[in-house]
Image (cartoon, rainbow, N blue to C red; front, side):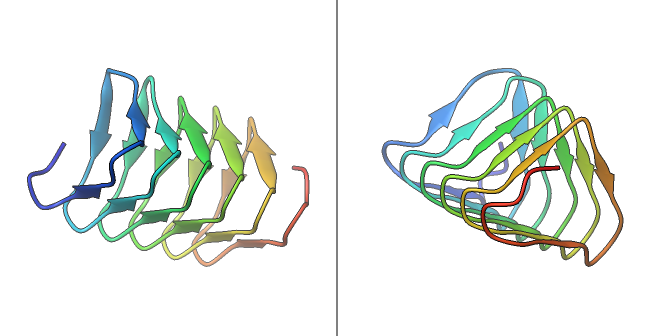
Length: 100
């Protein structure tokens, strides 16, 4: 984890995982194992990122799940949305409550 990342108390980090500088992981979120969270990403409360690569400036909404996926730069994953076994290009948007 970068020393310039912010991980709030109550967030769960399952090693091995990496969180780059400027990223914010909110309370109750779970990262890893085998997850990479890029620069300036925001992982909201109770979201989960597992075995995935999340490129820079992506926001993963509250209660959303990303598993075994690659998300491009500046993506937005909405509240309670789920992305599994997917690859999303830069600036992709997954609306609230969607399942991919």
